Length: 263
Image 1 (cartoon, rainbow, N blue to C red):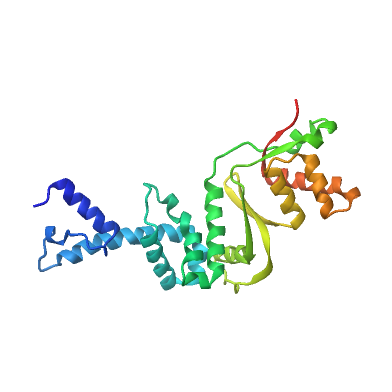
Image 2 (cartoon, rainbow, N blue to C red):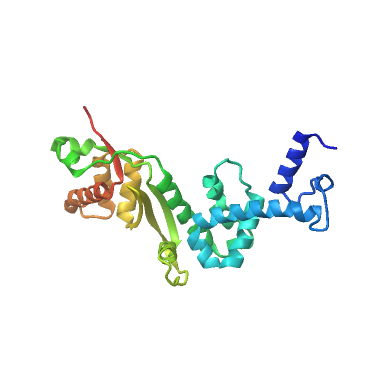
């Protein structure tokens, strides 16, 4: 007879890895209603179903694109590879995009990995730490001679990713419960930002020049350096207005949490 701690460990091992051959069946009673294996499978299957439900909540569009049967198969395969290792299910899906990209079967459909990455960015943005945001009034109070040396801090919720596929459109139709369009791939990747403002998650694409400017701002370049870099895309006389317009939109969108400038 197993001691209680050993029995508890064997039971947990079976629930977490039901097909790994852990010896516990002999410690469970069989009767006319159910065999020991059936009784054990009830707990193991219920646990995996709960994990699948958590993944379904985080990857609604992926579920819609694959359908019930294929999504369930994906969840079971994913759980076997990346079992839950945290007391909160909030972190369960963090490896989904990588799993889809590296798995021989799912890698044949690269849209899946990108869609999972976008949906996980939505989760990360919504759960990110809160922070104050800069307003246009804050900006207007700064002396004009300091603008060239301004540096910016992104709001903690801001996520940036490059997408070839039309996954934001796929996600939006799934979120609105509309018919999902066909996946389409562009020749060049498009930069997208995902962030939270108050209690709502937002996303939008960036043109090449704004994508570069935002990356430069996040990397610590000051406003003067950003203006100089924009000359690759914009005529020199139009650079100040273009850069100022970008900064105004970043602030209006709630993307900037702080402005740093020389004392």
